[in-house]
Image 1 (cartoon, rainbow, N blue to C red):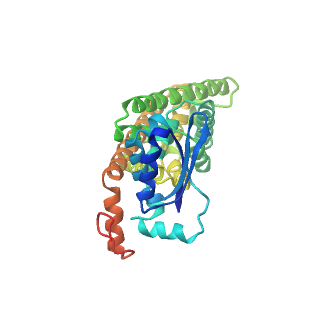
Image 2 (cartoon, rainbow, N blue to C red; image 1 turned 90 degrees about the vertical axis):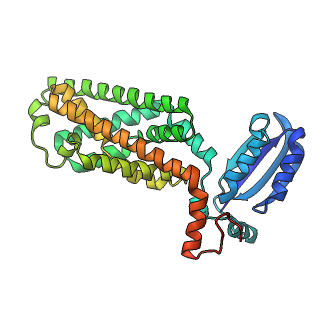
Amino acid sequence: MLTHLRLTVPSSLSSPVRELLLDDECVTGVTFQQGGVLKPEGDLIECDVARERAGVLLRALDDLELDKHGGILVVEPAATPFDDARRLESAAPGHPDDAVIWEAVEAQAEAGAVATVSYLIFLVLAVILAAVAVLTDSAILVVGAMVVGPEFAAVAAASAGIVLARWGLVGRSLRLLGLSFSFAVAVVTVLALLGRLLGWITPAMVARPRPNTGFIWHPDKWSFIVALVAGAAGALALAIQKTATMVGVFISVTTVPAAGNLALGLAVWSRDEIVGSLAQLGINIAGMIISGTILLLVVRTSWPWIMARTERLLGLRPWHVNGER
């Protein structure tokens, strides 16, 4: 699979950018239109690059300061069914599915640290589902609440911010997690208090034994282990853009269910439920951030080496560690 780059290039940078693209054996389809961009004024250069090499090429363009004085648009084609594309894939070390484009990771992390209206609505709805799951002792509703919850985007953003040394991003992510969960819990607590006034919710419904949902507010070592595994899986899915894998992450950790249980505990003022839910929520978020950071750090520092070694181990191609034949 190839990645397409659309570059807006000031005339002063056109020559070095063209030279960079033409000299790269993993680049094809280079086009040049002098004065092809009207706003801002500049030349239009486009190319296709093997996805495994896209990150390297983007860093080289940054070294030319094209990111400051021009424009870079990264496009992922749906398919590249031609022979030259297959040649480039063979020339580039690694597999396209394992390629990491850090510019895309950073962009996703930045987006995940923003408190949008839809983010807050999804989180409130997820916590409501979790609260109903507690009241009905329904494991199915717990899973539904986990899937609806959008909080992993902020968790992944915090991990990426640590690895990229973007401390402002880390701060925004943690603030979003704290404020959004506080808001969602407050809203659901108010709704639960209304339910108490209507007689729909009683303290006994919350405090009774719940075989299917009792784990929500009983954190143990397995809670932390699951959070570590889920955080690592989610971070890897973020890095290689495997969005389908994220669903599995959503339904493996009990952040949202713990928030729903916390809201009910506050509504009926059950100290044990409150403390247990807070502990479960904190353990899950901390575990995911820790393992996500470690995984992204490994990818950041050793991913090309790992891919090259794996290819040699599996006998896929006779590459050396540095990616050369």
